[in-house]
Length: 246
Image 1 (cartoon, rainbow, N blue to C red):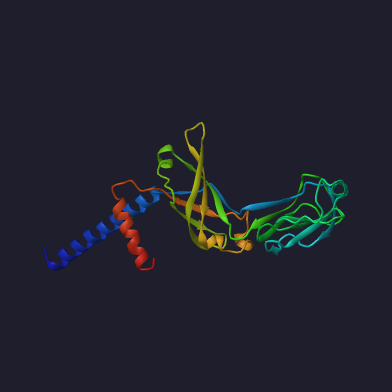
Image 2: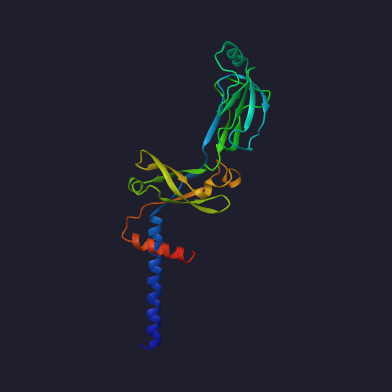
């Protein structure tokens, strides 16, 4: 056998080993990841409600507006409140973080948190019932993802606290998140329907609008704990790819 043939043989063996190793690592990686059946961006919600019925006399904000804590939202004129003030049941000129009460039964509602006005259930001139909601505020810097996965009981046991989750936004932007909490319901086929809350500093700091507005669908890939024999090799290869910028 000539040296040329030997080099070709050794080169072919090397290529085969590299391809087999790469395929093994890819297969192992896919065995340790599961794609969501559904996922969407969510935010902490704060409802604005009233204990007294009345007519909305003033509307200071609109849906989609950004508000700061303590900012006025709307005013409601309540005859029942005015009667309770005269009877001494409620104190006039009462001020709290959520509202201010005037002696004539006028309630000025304020934002208890900074955020975005997600919904207004009543407009100026409309009547609001006692105990009902006036609107909803999405708290700023509180965005997270609620995702659902369908996994086997064995794979459910491989979901670790703080596990890594890859989030793909509708504009093809990819961000990293971690598992915040997990809940599960097992169906009749023995599959674990798992709901995972994912938090991401990059997402939380994003504006509550556009591709990061609450309700926006995303793709989530959950990385399970790798218990296989190649776990260390896979982690080392992944760290190497990160170091070279891939």
